[in-house]
Length: 81
Image (tube, rainbow, N blue to C red; front, side, top):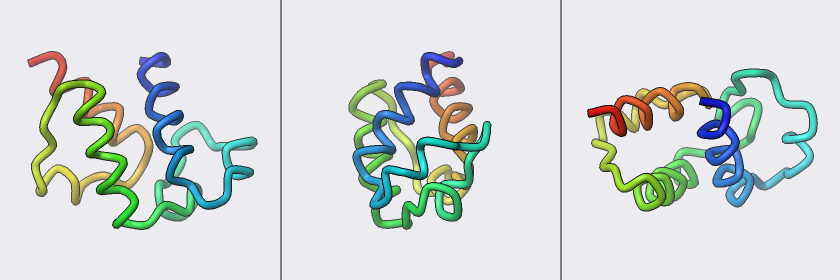
């Protein structure tokens, strides 16, 4: 799971406006509040995640992503199917 988290953080960093927020992240950062990533950028992030992990994320699932662990858990559930 930590490797997956690291890979996701790498993707998130590409879209974060303020890279400094990644220096002292909480364990499970809030995508919008902690990472300052808006919903439009989140869609780009999910596209990258879909390509990287060869999965498909439905719109309903996208709406449920609030924290980093939400993305991690979503990917794990898709990979384990």
